[in-house]
Length: 204
Image 1 (cartoon, helix red, strand yellow):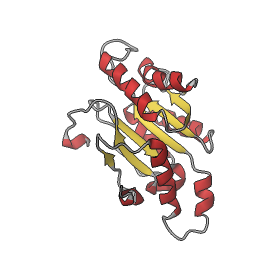
Image 2 (tube, one colour):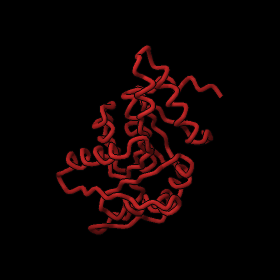
Image 3 (cartoon, helix red, strand yellow):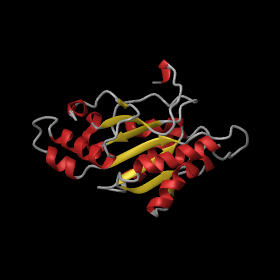
Image 4 (tube, helix red, strand yellow):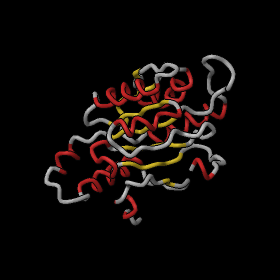
């Protein structure tokens, strides 16, 4: 398989269904890409201290209620997330206090025997949550962290110094971002997981 497309990641890339490269190998390839990004003499040290962050929005939820659970489709997608990241080396999981994020993370947390860290988010306080989540990820050097948030979860990438990405569309649940903070704008991939969705051009 030609891995050249992974060399330039400043533009978010979508990997279509059927891409079968294990995520553990994908992460390694991104690390090599960061090494080759340029003649910067400090590059090896940056790669050695890199942290990988997977970021997702919670899966499909019931729309009624103050703290609604996942739908059957959302539960299935949460299981798909666990299957997708089972070999990705995740060592920490971060969610908000809301049930839909905790239930999205639950299958992977159970599989890996991890207790998710809860970073609360409150109405009108999305920026504060983004900054708190970014700080929490930074407390896990040399680890791979899964962040399960809401439509604003993409803001965590910008908080690391990565490229700004629009908030996730309300009707999209299959986005899976992989970001390597030490590689700055060159360390970002956009993947999709679980059941396919009918996504409008505006949201792709």
